[in-house]
Length: 339
Image (cartoon, rainbow, N blue to C red; front, side, top):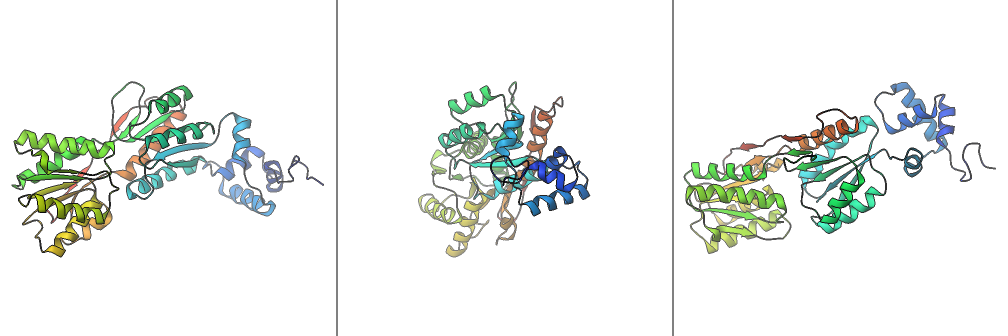
């Protein structure tokens, strides 16, 4: 026989959980979603009731009943990149107290794949979307505009009406890297890059611009490969670069893992860093401060970007004035032994 309130499925319902825990269905729903305004003792009662009944929430039914889900979508290009893992952790920390579920889409640096994810996730009626950068298909742009779902763009900045973004200037980071090497007296400067996503290209453009202004730019010293960035690739590209251009005396790597690989390869080959060649990385991953020599790198506020982007999206959902805007969180050059 079907239990009261379980319709025809035989599954326990939210109403049953509410009755067993002695609260209203609304309070039970909020408690199970982790909404911070629910008293801890009530949360415990509801959770114990749900556990004893074997209740599992049905987000699809909840979205149908309210014409809106309790989820936000985060679209990132990689789950293997620590940069985005730290950003996701920060987003979760902000969204969890509000009872919002974070749905993660990994588009593997493929904007066509991102378009498919956007199409699928919009069908779930998310409350909002956090996007990485601005490089996407026209189809994606049209779907996002037509949906009316609030969006916040992360990692890059743009000043345009109706666009909300939080990040830092990738191009300015490239300029700072170049000027630091120039201040160290280096003149044969190379840019070594992999993956070649828009942010990597923006860093390269900043580096290039600063070298041109200094009158030392040499296009042959740019190494740009589409392969995924890795420590192993960094060592290979470093070896190839010095074989072709033995007079290179400074290198800016688009990511720390490439620079880490180059430092390890230099150690194997007996190439002195920074005496023979100075190196700068990007993102300042934890291992970079412990290499021999310690790697100079540009520290990026990846966790702060995730936290602030989530806060800005919540502000937009709450209708707070000034929530939609552009916020530059900057970056920091961490000068260490490699330069």
